Image (cartoon, helix red, strand yellow):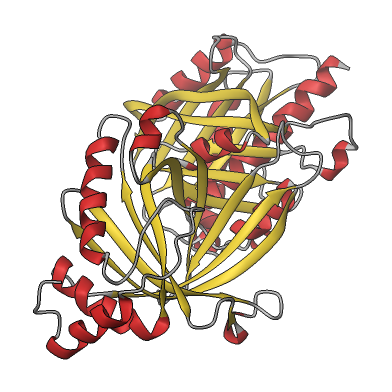
Length: 217
Length: 219
């Protein structure tokens, strides 16, 4: 399982966000370049349609592949009350012929994208990862060199943390409180709940840029 | 890692495998000064597509296997022999397969037995049994030559040891022999340096051979 929230930020404020995250997390950013292929089951395969994501980390010297399955978000009164999504997520490292395997099994490529940006991984009440990336589409199949932004000028911010059925409310609370620190720059919410950019972003970014993140927002 | 040959018991025409043969084979390993070591185990799953309606099944692989090996329990191997694919994955890929609900493990087999050390060689002799049953479906043997990891370079010494083994076994006049398959590893994208995916491919090959033998006996 994992807890997750998402938000968007204008590219012009990303540098300020990076300064803020650097200050909050106390770790260095990691560059991120991930080719993501979303596959869906063919029409007759499976009791119900299924979807799986193949992620290829292009930052490594040798491309490293993972298979990710994201389940539905937890529902019910308890889930309504917390401000993050709690969902099942399983990820498995695999060899580089994984796309061939899934094609052979009857899965089809639904879409692919390239995420370019950076991430911070840190411990703050829970082990959290913040990724800030521009999402790009490929003009030709698998042509990651020719990717163009899907939403120019806007980047996606995602905060995730591994959780279990025992500790998810504690993890969700830690994540919510972390998100408060980012609030002047961006608003983070459950995936699918669009909240847009925040009006205070420009002022907050200007303040961060002028003093390198030393001021408490 | 050391090269390994995976062999399976090929019963003579008209005979079937039984536990007496397994006992004799184990005794044979000891008779050539094999030092009995610990237990070993591998597991193999046959996956079948879960189809919504009656569709042409040739669209989907009929020989999709999942294999876990004692050497690396944190890994899992998928083999589709028809398309010469072997995939290495973290063992939690099995939980992804369960969640996808597109393929289901129909049959699971255990390969289990004892290992024997004979100088630089290691033999593993084991029974093939369904996971929830004790009915013997076959006998399998792994033969390792520990000092060499090149498939090509080890070929001669492996072949010589295989001959010695066959000779020792012949004295017992058992109704069959250990047959070997030599898959074309290159077709799977595997090189000369031996790796666990090589072992997975060998298991897939002998498994399909064992099924073919069982079917020909039945017909």
